[in-house]
Image (cartoon, rainbow, N blue to C red; front, side, top):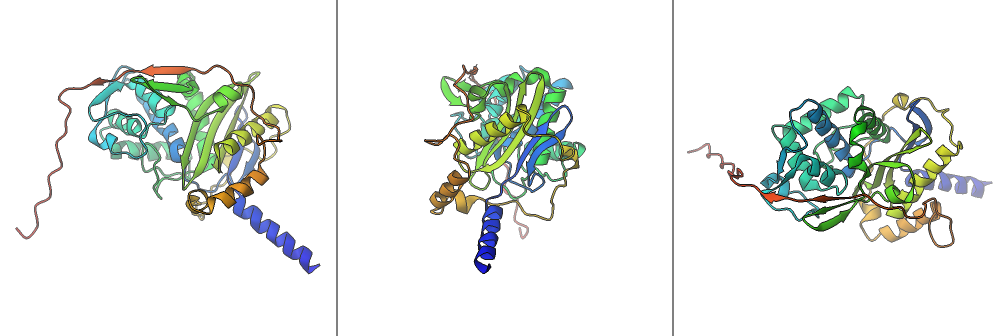
Length: 343
């Protein structure tokens, strides 16, 4: 009896340790089809760029910018981490191309340059991000940057990210093509989208992936089949295979009618401000990562050798080409050092 109790307690502890947020929503009714810890805060990583996109779309609607507005790489933009774009100070692209680079290529530098174009400065843009989040009822979210690089002040929940994604598609269906692109080439350099479902799960519209050691692999996805839209949010996946397979599994189950809206509406999920965001760095980016990955493969073996996959045969992609140019007279005035108070 004692052994049985101990095994049961061990299983529950293991399950809690392996819990990561999941949310599946029927878009039309906003009904929750499935959820795990959807109100628990998490580091959103590059899914943060969904809010950057929303504010840019709203600026386009307000005619404060246009798709041909130049977006210039500033010193601040080129100082961002994890750069793949190869862009240097002063390189310029259209705002339309900047949206592709931010969403498809997840370019951290371009996201900042885009924010600086839409608003007076990056801090002003971030303030607007938080104002817009509040207006959407994203009560478990706080943004610290336009790109989602690690900050303890940049967090969200699966609930809030689903609400954000659905609002983008509801307000701006004409901009779906930015989320459907599968790769960009920036001056000939190809950067592929990390959203494999765009080419391996039919009907996928987008929307954004994200990864940091602290967050694991995140996904906010919208898929449409036979007139039905389903939003899926998976946070904290260990590998891209896990993220892709689990997302495809939830979508398959939703479209097959195996998930039913009996858990209320997404808006009614309670966010958990009493809980700190999980920091996945020890499990994912240290010498403990192999053991943790093995445990996750045991939980989610889909797509591994000998196991069926929820992904489909590869479909043609939708690449987008970006060309940049050098801007002249780019401001690069250094901030003066404050005068010592004792002089």
